[in-house]
Amino acid sequence: MPHTLPAPCHWLLFSDGGCALYWHRSNVGLVEPRDGKWCTLVQWRGRMLYATAGFKAQGMRWVERWVAASCERDGLPRKPREARRRLH
Image 1 (tube, helix red, strand yellow):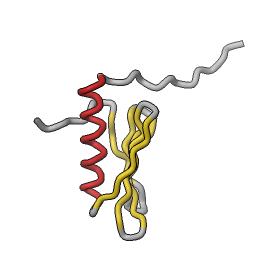
Image 2 (spheres, rainbow, N blue to C red; image 1 turned 90 degrees about the vertical axis):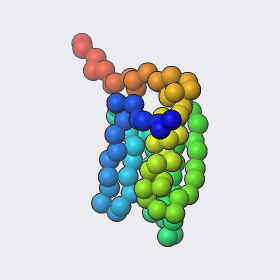
Image 3 (cartoon, helix red, strand yellow; image 1 turned 180 degrees about the vertical axis):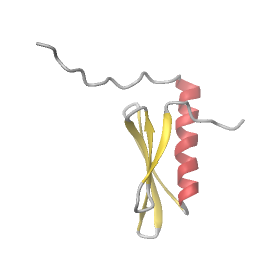
Image 4 (tube, rainbow, N blue to C red; image 1 turned 120 degrees about the vertical axis):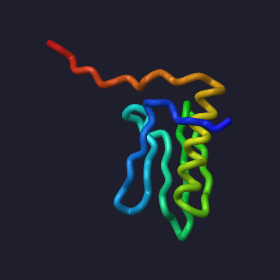
């Protein structure tokens, strides 16, 4: 069964070719070029996972699949808390 990303997820593309996966407004995944390889990072529920990929699309798929599988297994995390302005 193919994994699909939850609706609050979206990719942000960088000018250097890298990209970041965001959950609402929090960065949960990163794919960036480094020494001729594509390095990936997933930060999810207090865990940090690293991997390398041969090309950018492969790294993006790995991050997407990991996040989607984690959501299916553990359920969706709550939306990150927004900073609230104090009223005096």
